[in-house]
Length: 346
Image 1 (spheres, one colour):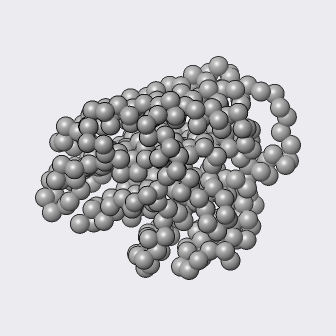
Image 2 (cartoon, rainbow, N blue to C red):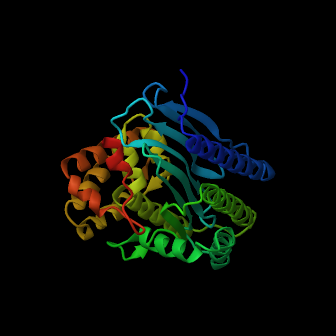
């Protein structure tokens, strides 16, 4: 089976960019693991959209190791070159999340994507956010500084959009501490925009590797309070991803051929009881969604989120938004609502 690439030159250039970012990050993570005498590696998993006719992708994944509880560095390209009725031409992306085992080492989420319509119009989506269970203010500022250096002209806009996108209304707090997000970005200069995407991606990757290196090499002991803080934060992450994150929902609604990869951002364990305590705060019909998601979890504490559970969660999400399409409007947004989902369906 072979993945057929998108025909568009812009999409092909975007694929080269995100593939290089993927290699940069995986090699950096494995180098750090080696320096720390860990044998944990990232294994390649390939998936195909319609048996490769409309693309697919490769993700490098790891789980249940001594350094990373969960990690996924996913590159994908889906296109509709052979479907003239579709308005969407292609979507090319790197989406990665790393959840370290050590509570004082922050998680990170990075997403860089190029979406192109059949009309030739397109836009970039650039995300980079630092997600610590226990904040280190020095690391927070380091990440902000890196984003400002990578995108000086867009920095303020990116931070403002990130603050909106990662806010969780029912908890009155954010997911993460350092957010940068450019939504539907197109300055009109294709080369300049592609260079910006590369700059943001490389800065986020390199800065996180530096932050992770410093955190994992410290000798601060871990106590029960640290473990509890990490589990609570991972539960908050689970809530945000599955009830607010537009990219995750879009991916699940468009097709069911990469559910494990799309939900690769979920942490290994969550606190089921804590999630239940948040149901009363959820607006309708998202309260029903959260209850159904919790029902899909193991009846243990903490609850393991393995691949079998992810498949159940994907089914729950699709059923919910199929029954309540109006709830899609309740998803998070930086400034505008990207038309990706609509254009996949059209």
